[in-house]
Image (cartoon, rainbow, N blue to C red):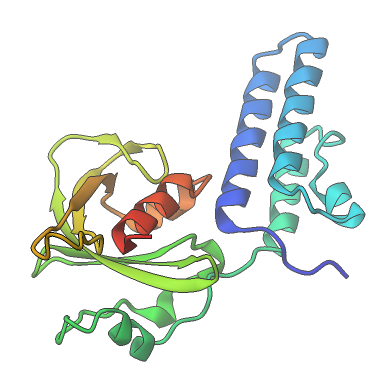
Length: 216
């Protein structure tokens, strides 16, 4: 039996490929064009899983799908193979943010870990945003200043247009000749991390930002 092997952001990416195919179908494009769109979508999905087994490759193949119902069943079936975000406890979160003596905790019991690429929550009292992610096999957490904006814009994590906030953090990067040196980095991200987790399709910017913040 195939073990769980699909990450949240990968399933989101697959959903976007299906959306492109379904849109082309509704536009009644020529069959050869539609076939090319499907082949391209299949190729992009295959590229996400270079080490997929034969069984997994067959499971991911969408070339035989025709109807909206079949696409929905395909997504539902793949959802059974989602790798959940690693379980984390309140005690572990406190250790990640030791300077926060009154750390506001997320409701961990009310989180669907299978639909998380990263864990994040806001503390509106202190205008802080906390982000936790498994980076190279280790859970890392960063604390950010958080300032909502009045205009919609692109999120740097999921690259979708919507309600965003500016967040920034001081990195752990140091310079031996200047003990007072510090560097702050920031960007726009979704104000609601739940929406961001529904849309994120790759973690390149997220991991780069976390590595920079950790001084890696």
